[in-house]
Length: 421
Image (cartoon, rainbow, N blue to C red; front, side, top):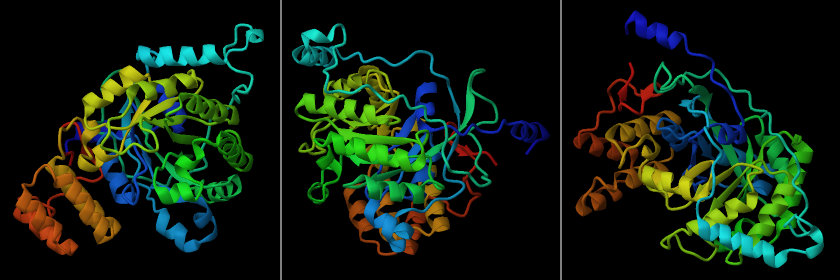
């Protein structure tokens, strides 16, 4: 490494540690990894953070189990000093706006139908309380020394700021007390808590969590207040919801959550009963975003497979950030502009999986997702039959992958596609 290059890296400013809400409000492009059942665990979160994913989520954690069981805590939450990325981020130039006219027309019609003539100029029905003015200013997480560096020692523009990525724990609970207990245990290790109000699985609905909360806005508000009461009103608490077939229900949930003091809102553009094979409704998603009225940042989720999808979602729905789930499983480098999983992402994941000691079933599953677009059908069948990490690595080596070369973690340039050192 030349002296000039070494000096450039030595002169880097200290990365800013910002709450997710501040990142969403202040930066033009914020990319988010969704909470994935069993899949968004430490090695995969670390991997996507190498490729322009600024905010990551844990898999959904059951608050009651987490707060009362040491075994659940060990199983459900593992983190490291190096998993959050460091990024050059461009300041936001203008506030986002919903451009979907159908969504705006639907919201206007709904407000007109609900309007009380005695309410004056305020179209909000009297049943919707005013939002709680919460300014999220801190997290309790104190990071240890990290070796992570940004993709480049020099900013891409004079205005770019160096920012450390964030990790959010997603929790599911049928009551506020368990959620507050779990939040207190989680706080030193994460940058905020997100309440799952969107899991569509039948078992979750039967337990009173996930989508069961979509039509219980007062319970959601009580959960938010319980966590704030325990952790303080400047600690981040967000919600992730699905749209409701009855848009009136969506507005009621959003407005009630805002009144309780949520830090931001993530909206998945499908209803509880829609399968993932059905397309996301961008107009309903935009409707939910417009219900927020810009009082807190919003994030859109659903059917995001490449950068074009992300740009379209931002433009039509007026959101501050976009969240990918299956798209990142298939291509962890999606937000870095790759159209399918690059070879170096597979090499990085294998090294991370070995370093962190990833269990084989998940290690194998992630690689199957990443390599699906690279394999023909007989290769998929053969790869899926492999039964150990050693067999997987040996097979990939026959395909030309080099895991013994100089490590590309953590100093990796996702934009140029090669190791810095």
